[in-house]
Length: 186
Image 1 (tube, rainbow, N blue to C red):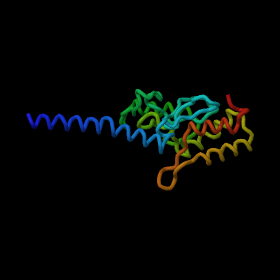
Image 2 (image 1 turned 120 degrees about the vertical axis):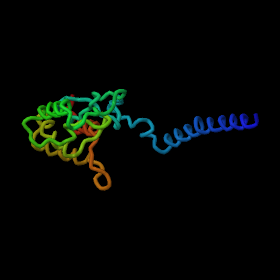
Image 3 (image 1 turned 90 degrees about the vertical axis):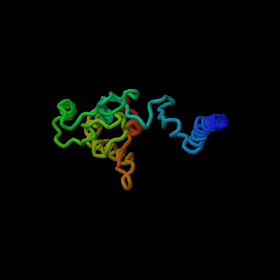
Image 4 (image 1 turned 45 degrees about the vertical axis):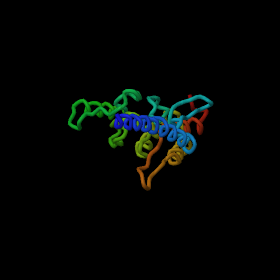
């Protein structure tokens, strides 16, 4: 009986500690020191929520930079990789279909052809974004000077590079694109 009571007391203490105190402490510290990340890194335009910087946003509008392909159609509930081997005929077909969308280009960055592990990767390599510059500039009817300004905008949104791979958040870049060229925005 003595052992049972000690075990129950330990169960109650550990339940309160790990089920209540610890989660509340982590939540409070996150809100105090990392408020943006704790709130989901939400991005707004004109007071309206447009998405999270942590999740890719589906778009096929040629006036915007396209994110990395998603095996789960950018759905957060069904996120995940396709789990297809490199020898899979289905994977080869999906890559060929994506490659055809960029025809007649020959050197297409891999992150524009293959889905990410989560299917929600918000970032692209600078090469993948630069690859899309001409399409975006043509769709927005940019002058050569505006195209050069677009290239500079892409360079300003490049993060990382020394200790981590260089990357560009596509949603943030697209929002900056609308801000930099408001007359050419939808």
